[in-house]
Image (cartoon, rainbow, N blue to C red; front, side):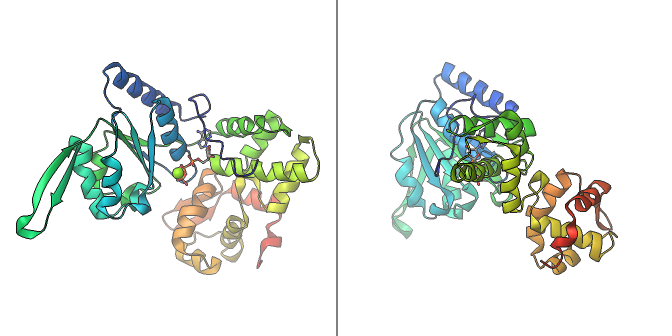
Amino acid sequence: MGKANFRPTSWEQYIGQEDLKTNLQITITASQLENRAVDHILLSGPAGVGKTSLAYLIGVMLKTKTHILHGPNLQKPSDLICVLTQLKDFEVVFIDEIHAISKEVSELLYPVLEDNTLNLIIGKDYNSKNINIPLPKFTLIGATTNLYHLSQPLIQRFPINLTMNNYTLADLQQIIFNCAQQQTIKLGMPEAYFIAQHSRFNPRIAINLFKRIYDYALTTNCKIITIVLIKVVFKNLQIYLGGISKLEINYLSIINNTFGNKPTGIDMIAQVLNEPVVNITNSVEPLLLKLGFLEKTNRGRVITVKGQGFLQKINFKKFENS
Ligand SMILES: Nc1ncnc2c1ncn2[C@@H]1O[C@H](COP(=O)(O)OP(=O)(O)OP(=O)(O)O)[C@@H](O)[C@H]1O
Ligand SMILES: [Mg+2]
């Protein structure tokens, strides 16, 4: 299976996100009826939820060339100008990680997005001249994990601004099952569901878990992936229900044990855990809140009965001081 990334090449293969897909399909059909380019689209959402895949898919659906650019590489205006000046009608320009473009490139994009015009200043000082170059009809798709790093004027110049929705376990089950269908070692829907339950509600994590399980099955010469086999792999990887890892378990046990499950401030937890606060708020707490293991009160964090039940079940003591 190697580095296969399983990018969907049809709407059917792109699982979940139904409202978003419907809206995009309507937009694409309407623009085709009037022979105009699809409006510029901004996609936002956490890592691994299918933004890049969706941008590629839109390009495929429009049967046109997609120019792929990466925000961190767009620092000088010329980095973008050379692509825009070579565009042909109806092509797509995709800027992945658009939050990482420089301020200059961002400002260059304003008239591009608003008036389909490249606004350039030629020459220096008194000899400088403003020229406007009209651009072909094209669609810019931007993707970002960090919407709040984009300037408001830039965000507002995207007529279509889409935020990815959460994935259900059924969606993730289907994504895993579809990946498995392309492989020689087989896996059923119940097994796909079991993996989905450990994938932190995230398609990329789901696929990566499947890859690890597949590798294990391959090396141990298993012809079919069973729940027993999956459990062995999860044990080796130290992954627990929901996709919880050691860091989250340590977090839960600190509140529960060290602080006796009294409402605890994030700074205290971060100190004991020896992790930066942002790491905890961005990577640890969202999953625990989603699983209903954690509650944020105005006096601090507490573990719910469900969270305590989970800790008891996995016998958290063995994680202490490790
Ligand atoms: N809705 C989906 N249906 C099927 N597969 C999906 C879906 N969403 C994501 N995937 C798969 O999950 C993996 C990660 O998706 P993708 O790279 O598009 O995420 P992303 O949002 O661009 O992440 P990042 O912010 O890290 O760039 C890919 O292998 C992709 O095929
Ligand atoms: Mg991406």
